[in-house]
Image (cartoon, rainbow, N blue to C red; front, top):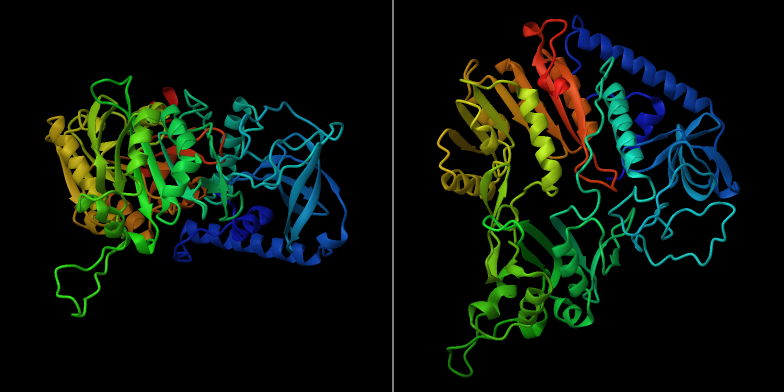
Length: 561
């Protein structure tokens, strides 16, 4: 995730306004808001007083890096400004080139490391520490060699940082965001829980297809495609599929027909040593002329009404007509390369269904002792071994659920609702994606789970149907944008004993924790869980309790775990 200009301004000013109404003048929240606005105004005045920086007239500059920002860049200071640096790591002194300057901050690219820290050797040939040149930023004393500017993959940001240091940086980033964005006075953030597998862990990947038909990732800091033949963070079956897809024979078949490929692999439900791989082909908006079906069944000379097909229909048309398909060889060769389970065509609209072209579309796998039925595009955790740690933190945060009703808001395919159902009297699972709801229902039936009630629809609307006292605790796992104010208002109204908030964006988590605290909750514990090693992405589990039910020393089970 890239840090946008607004986020960088907030870091530079050491203050960020939370979303939502400021509230009444008599409330503590209003006092915090006023204090924050005054701090912002002071920072703006200080920025106005700083002399202008003109990167185009400045040569290389030496900086000490003292921290890491959310999104992958490092932080230094120059002439009173925060400088966000692509490359390096905290504790190093680097030589940089300024690339942009604003009133309160600047951006830079690391050119050389003057005083190195303890570094790791990036194994991936497509990784570029500074986002512009492949490989690690060279030491000043090293021969730089020929720079490779063929394009840097944007998937990883931390391959040059030792894994134990990655965990420390992520912990500090979360603590900083809680302080700045959430305005939590003394955020205590636990040690980041390490992924059991720092490499080859991802069970899902999405590859773009470049104009030549080669599979690719997006360029660091941009949208351009960077063709790749290997990836070191995907699971071995996906790595094998990627390598085979990168060969020229399949590139010719993909060219002009497929825009992107979603690849997923999961252990088979009956034999965990067997990995099942499913590919979903996202069709190009327009297919080549030879792929368009011809009109038939009319007398010669009569006008033919054109047949208008959606991109998905055009992609699967030869299969439906039992005709030779340009992509038929893909299924055969990938079956040999990676044990391909099935190939499907992606829907034309959000919320649509993938259509199986060859083999099997759905997967059955086990997670946390539960048998799951998953459609090709249904969201599920992409690092299963680390997700087990995530679930353990959720259990600890919720505490004893005996005889209680649990809300699972943004429940997806039931990754949390189904394993937690054995501990609670009832689980109410709210989810807006119809396909995920169907998969959760199928999985519940497979496991004979009867105490999970699925509630399809928007989170806020379904929460309004729940009266105070109907539920005791909640798990939240919202999208990256976080919970809406209407959802947070409903959680405040319900006055739940415990709320466990799972987030893939610590900035929006920090904002929402501040808003929940303004609605009667208190943050009890925060733990990062490293679901995405080698990248700047951070998963976080935060536990909140209702302030009026807590004693000054109330611990959480997560603190004692």
